[in-house]
Image (cartoon, rainbow, N blue to C red; front, side, top):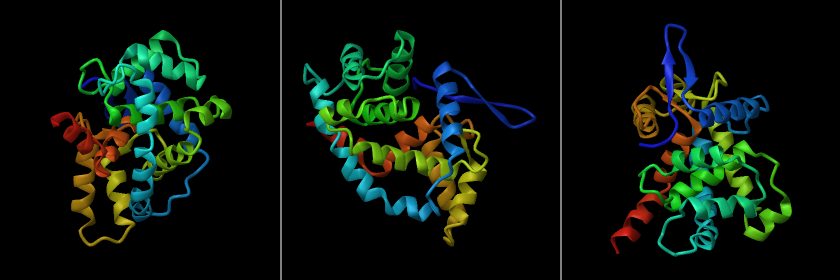
Length: 226
């Protein structure tokens, strides 16, 4: 799959970003983690699923606004127009990195769930950089709270604040919820997030797993079969 993955540097168990984009994501997440999290348990994250799901689906209008040729995907040029309208400044290299990281099917076009992940990454990387007026024009002002909830959830899981979630951290988070089958649940959730099976989950992987958990990627697949 295209995108960003970390590698484990032994024996210190330190995760080293493999791309510039991943390094920026990790740095931004570490900065955000220093502010703490409002999440108290893994259950509190789950309870927010319906509200997050509803909010993310409202992105559809924004997605369709920038899918100018209405082919169900946002291409590179359409993405550049979107970022320009959002009034966030990225270099050409950064735009390419974002596009490649979120175009996980490597089909040169971002589907709806991939676009949601991209918008949330932009929120993390360019926090407070986008003008309120631009967000209001695009109908994004209410999405900011949802994206912040997702960042908050990741910070809660990232116990050592290194910008990644490890298997042990996932087990710890779910153990705290008091579930009897917490170990099995933790392993299943972690495997769903750890796409490249390297034992560590970055924010992008977490976001893609989240869109699956609330069923957004399934909706996309169904539309593709129509």
